[in-house]
Length: 194
Image 1 (cartoon, one colour):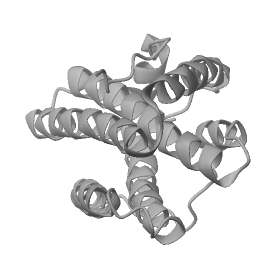
Image 2 (cartoon, helix red, strand yellow):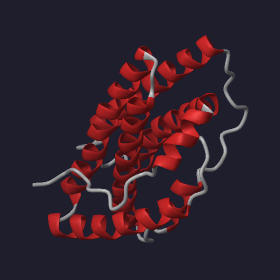
Image 3 (cartoon, rainbow, N blue to C red):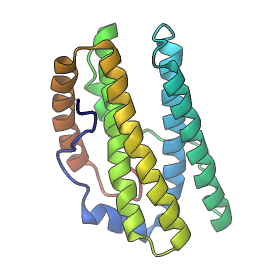
Image 4 (cartoon, rainbow, N blue to C red):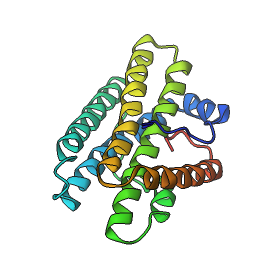
């Protein structure tokens, strides 16, 4: 049973060039994304406390994302970069959320698959950052993140398969992956993860 997502489009060279040209700004956004990812995993626990099969893995994911935040913050401190006061809205995630269906079960499935898509896209982009970095410490860090985020992409698909038929999960995942490609291509270039 396949649990890995095949993204429909690759991130562009222009995106990674934009990130490298203003890496300090990228780090601020990256820190915010890690905070939001940790909160998102815990929000599943809060909204779906009866889904006991996935709660331990959600907690582990939340802790791991918080550890990523701590690591990004340490890099920022070394570079004299302050955290942003406000966490702005992520247009990429918002557009994907807008595509989630109504209805408790449908929304639950869609939110899990959305999380999988976001993590998979993050893994792809962290790989690109890793490949673009000259600094050995940053290369090592982003290589580790790339592996971790790829694993998270699979985790959320596996969670969905606990509760929904395989055929329904993969049909919906295909639809959401198609839409994610459209959203990604519509985003303005900026030194941000999304």
